[in-house]
Image (cartoon, rainbow over all chains, first blue to last red; front, side, top):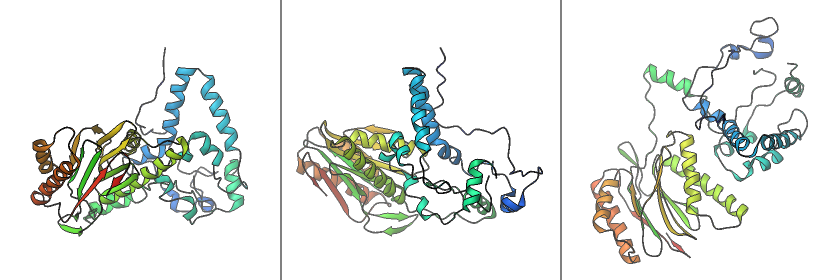
Length: 141
Length: 224
């Protein structure tokens, strides 16, 4: 019987394709991306960067696989269904969501970590053009 | 994929943006600025009615004294306090974060928090960052199960012991404990023992000095 349990420490995954932000013509699309993104950012800046980025997703995957092994396939499926419908709730299409329902379901509303103290969304000084943001979310950009 | 029109909003939390720039600067010969360490002696003992924590109050920056009277005994919960050694900012922020989490936990479960809960939270947090957060902690408190004392290392391991010392002056303080600690000490004897241990650290270790802080945690009350 295979348990398919992932490792306790999140390991960095090497992606199949190193996307160099290609545009329609197969080259760097300067009009939308600009010159700054010309280099691809796959190289490791810090040994911890990959682990920290994937920590939450990795922990969820571990918990779901343990749940699947103990309670059967239905358990992670039900939870995933509820989380998916919670993700659909939001404000206007281009605004970031507060994720209240999603946080209450995952238990993040009881946690305080560096993501709630450093570089929080309310102090972020960048904003995207609404049409472009919606186009990106729909996959048109 | 990012673009000028809709820039990628960086994830909140620790930012690794400047790491590449820092490695480049290091190869060019620019020295990395040193973080303020606490260069400490911190101790804790369990006595008859509870837990006594002790700490010195000197914070060093390499060979200079950065703060002559800094507080190393941090509040976690009304029945739990935590001494911190290592990088001063790391111990400060870590204990504050875990204190907030414990408060949320207490409101959610409607019970007084156990020391084991705080220990587990601290362990998991420090292991997540693989030792890059330089916080060595002594956690002590009294809960429904009685008095507990834990020592937590920066990489995320922890031990539950009747008496613990940490920091650069830990060897001097441990020598005092090994000679003088007995099970079920009285409060005055316990305070005297902790004071002697910190004094040993203060006199024999260059990184510890100034004053001695003592925190007594009993079942119903705490004295700092």
